[in-house]
Length: 267
Image (tube, rainbow, N blue to C red):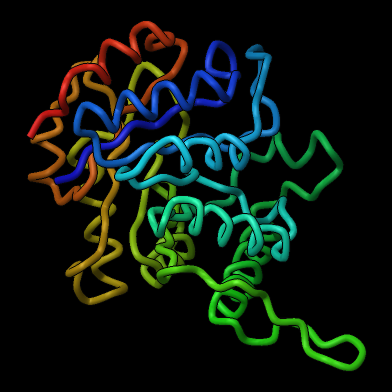
């Protein structure tokens, strides 16, 4: 199993410089991945920084860790802009970028006049994924005027895609995730004091396997917290290939994160 950290982008973590510092610390101590939240606004927790800009800085400050958003709500972003951003991050990190995708929270849509309906978000997410796959292959994504629109440069390596799904979600998110390279399940209601159990991770893995037929080469990402008493070994036995340490101001601030990341991950 591999080990990563999930960093918020708000509150005491809302300075991109602080995120870079923690990413470097994680790499120095043997962690395998550094992932960031993606929100426009988080209630009661100003300031908030931009995840793409922060990841660009992290890409330049590190050499080994996998990086990416967990997760980026594609339905509230322009696919063409995401295509540019993801390839730039892939190249800045020398192929260490993974794109976690999900529907996001309705609040981030409704606040700015976007449709928060779950089906509408799902439809736009699927459309954006189709666009990205074509753009990353260097094939025409649109045609206006005398020549087709082709996105260059292309990624250094095929960009991995991880999907998100709530533990009790209907089949559609699991079907989507089964077509990607991994899944990062989330609780039905986020509570920083608890996360998905190992049993729920096993259930999610079984649902994806039912759609794929096999989990060979597929990532199952367990996001949890040892500060809450979770044991990564239990999640590995349940089928997780990644343990991602959840950092949240209500679990512990930057000082706690530094202490946790200064220790080598279990395993």
